[in-house]
Image 1 (cartoon, rainbow, N blue to C red):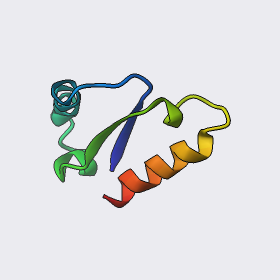
Image 2: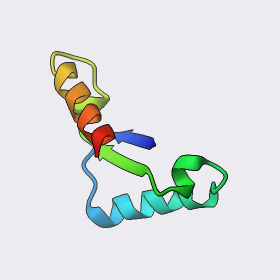
Image 3: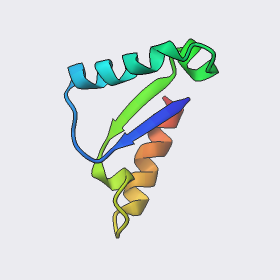
Image 4: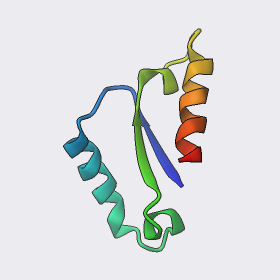
Length: 64
């Protein structure tokens, strides 16, 4: 899986466009199998007291 982390919220269309940018890299197994995800939550990229919440978000996305 490729999990792209973003601090700023993105709408569905922007996320879909960003995932499509990966489509040219078909030699990458995660791209080939459709496992590219965008996680747009500042808790995943901004260090601080909420880092544990960010880790939980990442873990949940990986389990999906």
